[in-house]
Length: 232
Image 1 (cartoon, helix red, strand yellow):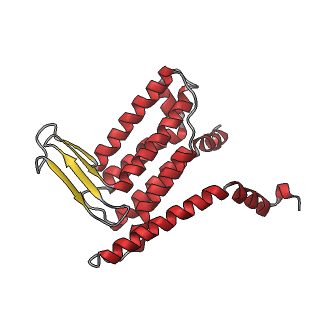
Image 2 (cartoon, helix red, strand yellow):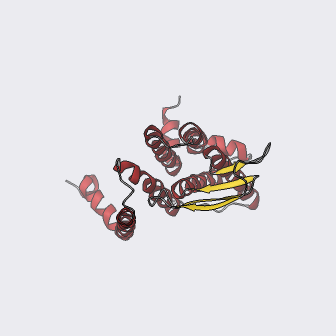
Image 3 (cartoon, helix red, strand yellow):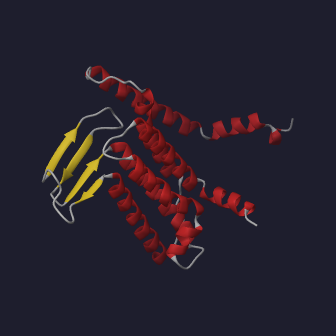
């Protein structure tokens, strides 16, 4: 069989091309496993009942970082950059507010007044840093912050692509299939699934929403081509 049509040959070429990345991510996974093991060893009161809930935060972190590293932003003029930046910043703020990461005491002060605290938890979920005043408060959970920043960066990159082809930044957002889906999916995950507590169903569904959103954004061009082929 010709190498051009040999799937195994293609896999071998891909593995050779990604050798450095595979080694680097192997080290990352080993370090994460070591962190979790060390935490459980020194915290005997913590018991892992559902191992997947330990894995999910690292899925968010690793997939998010991987997508950001591999996503390149195109060169655009200052106006296009300003439009994409403004939309991306607004998108991130909406995600943070919807997920409870950013709380605003607009109509009345937040409960608890001024606060500054660190809550230790299993790596990925923790440490959770809470800081704020009676009017504004940040609750930083590592995997959520990394995940939402990653989605925002991907939206930003796709907006730069889109604004090169259209005159309006809003039209640019709508014309990007991955960007359009990504606005709705993570907001659904943040509002419907990330309530005051993280239940089992919320963990599973929110992680699926995150992975689907990142996939749509990262492969936005391929998704757009596939959709355009199916349209009449």
